[in-house]
Image (cartoon, rainbow, N blue to C red; front, side):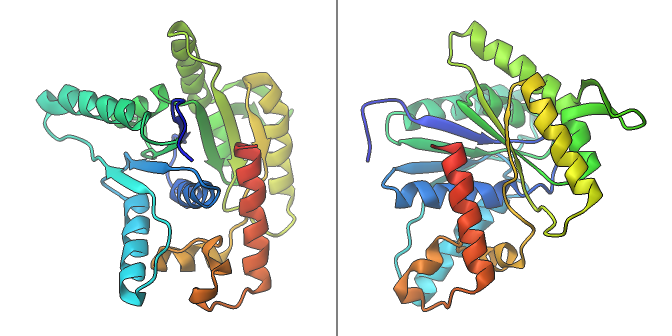
Length: 265
């Protein structure tokens, strides 16, 4: 379903590793493809390459079993070790994104878990920014510095400050307001005082810092198992896979559907 409009660029970013950015990127890509959209993904965390590995696993699975699953177009970049070639790589990525914008409906960019020039490049292209966060006070601290003794917000966290600077930069370039979404990921299925506290704080902070918050995905073994085959929970409805949908599969599928509809109404 390509259109004459420019592709929507979705950046998956958080100034912290281990929040499950690649899982969300892959599931969102497959969801959009199944809806009829033409999707490209760019892995800017090329050194770790979790998203690239996910796609490679998917390609190998399709080849081994002689089946045809939807696979997004894929591009990968790693940090340049030669400082003199950084500006050249920067131009290469900018040029690639500009060209892809006229060939695809959506571009999904997976970012490194720490701030570097690739991290910065991705955020400067974002139309929608998705920030996965676990139910951890450490993750919460990246969004806001909270005085836990009296439950008051002292200041924006380092990542929230970075996003504010990006919003100002995009506004100065005449671009639309950045659609920032913070979503829970790898969330414990157990009710806990800590999880409730984190979610309550994120709901409160969302109005202050200008993002939408949704609970997102629970920490399910199924997501890790499917990674090994390059599959998503959205693929399991395919008859030729001959997979029986367990309650965990069905619950995960509902989570993905709800998250995708929250991100892309």
